[in-house]
Amino acid sequence: MYNVVAYQVAGTINLKESKKQLPWQLLFQDSDELYYQISEHAFLYLFQYGMVSFFNLKTEEINTLLAQIKPFCSDYFTENFSENVDIKIEPNKLNVQFNLIVLPELDQEMIRLVMLNASQSVALDRYSEITENLIIETNRHTLFLEKYGRINISGNKLKRFIGKILNIKNKISENLYIFDSPDITWENEILNKLNIELKNVFDLKDRYRIIHDRIDIIKENLELFKDIMDHKESSRLEWIIIILIIIEVFDMLMLKLF
Image (cartoon, rainbow, N blue to C red):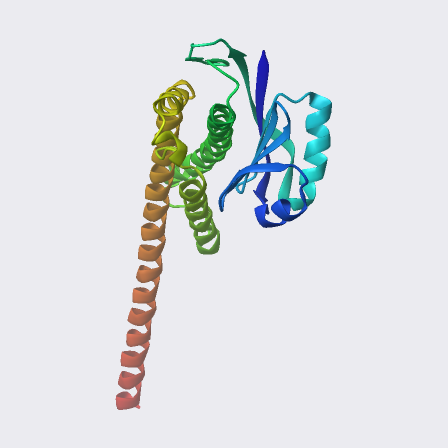
């Protein structure tokens, strides 16, 4: 029995510097990923968006490797989101279940697919928590609007809130390629089947859509707040203009009378 453990350890990992300094055998690389072989049956997968996945490594070994990776991390997390998956090897059998995956052989590309999908699952957990907290915060403002007929957020804070939502949406779109399949699966039927079943078992597509739906709801609420604030500001300017006109008319009348 083998084990895959995926962690969200940082906001980002500098892969360029990691590649230069980490000593292990590099099996695969692109602009967002580095896939290493640590020993004969042990692998490490690094992702630019702060994910690290380990295959067939003990807790002590993982902690040692994390210490080596930490210098290349930005916004290192003290508490990590994680996913654990057991892998069993049985010849001529492929079966994907939650927390147990049966593979026909100890193939490095099959292992990479498991590590990739487990990492995507962890990233979705993190973004799910972030968007849930943002929904709660947005609901506080909508409840205040319902109760008092006005919003209790300043223009500057609202703009920062909108910027935060847009940045989160951009990060999800850039880093999570839930609907894309690795190139290796295009020419290998078994790898393609494994990849599809992993996405289904981890429920990646539905969880991804839920997060995007939450972001759309939050954006819709914030745009409404912005419209209310713009209308309030427009009304204030209109009253200022009216008052200035009244003063001007009054001044003209005073000049004619005196």
